[in-house]
Length: 199
Length: 346
Image (cartoon, rainbow over all chains, first blue to last red; front, side, top):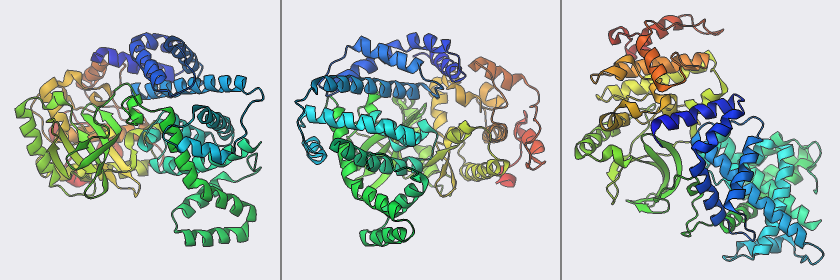
């Protein structure tokens, strides 16, 4: 991208930060190709049991980004990372809906330990994997209510695959805080997931 | 435990958890027992969280691998960002390349493991465009070797400068954990004492590299990092020269131009005093949360730096040393000869 266009992207992101909702509409066409490529990659890399069209993934992600209340996208890379998180959440929700539909009674009764064991195998059973994913999603919502910052750390680290340093940069907190929060949040989620599986 | 424990004190629990995590297993049980004396409920929760830590880490690990496997079988989370880098997971010299930890105009920084020393380091790969000419490479290597000789607490250490098999130049540095001034400034101005602390340490670091005849040329908040023990490190010196000679200043990123001295924007013949100007811009930004020369476009910022005859210094924040107004005026003097000596500031 030529420098002038890169600058426009920066300016538009600054305007979005200041609450100018139109700026996002101007921004998307500029980086559309990149976003589409991101959606395609996300879709392809999603080792899932569901399939979503690239175009509808992109659309849903856009709606989600546009609906964010006070976006703090510091730069282009950060914006793309946030878009990646949104796309993954969409894929998870589709998975969740599909699993909910299937659940009409014939759900296998397996313990959380068994589920966790299945996932650790090199070629995990995808149904079991989706089961754990849904538990995680549920418990993450709960975490977001009690400790929003910890939930953000999990989103960045787990869903967007960001490093400790990138997460710290994105959330504007110290790397040590991320490291600590990540460990504690995982342990907390693990216990919540185990408890939720027993219900 | 099906609902989050009502009234659970997360901050306390997290502080205890963090402390316990660092202990050996026997010390850990003693620690939990001590907590139990004060608050049995909290101790139970702490104990069970500690017990889940390892299983939780491995569950998240395998879940992530199974969900987000990459096409080539390498799990590089950062590759999800569109700017895919093919180095992930490869060996470069003694290093195994891990994830990207930073990107900038002057290259990509990776976390890397020195496999012989079993030590995590940061590797900065210079962009190929900047080192395409043999002349530029030679000069860069020579300068990096000189800089590597500098051992100063406020200067980011360079272990070595080397070349990958593909002919890419890279610098090996310690992997500093810390917060950049750029991140710190997102929350607005700094308390005057903290601003002065960053400033003094940055001066000391800059003085040390000037002493061996190297200019920084790109002193910006993004190149200042405060490690967890409070030491400020000056990073990325000398790199900007490559961009200048190969690209011209026209392609420099917006944020960086804002810290450039008038002479750096106009003439080729600059000396160490251009770095002192940049420190002035940074000190200004730390005190008031904005830069002295702002504009919505690159050329507007340039024009303001070049045309404003004297910088207007706003009213100092409460508690700031009154001498700062004069100091800022001198740091941001248009005539480099009027700028102060680093030795008197550090």
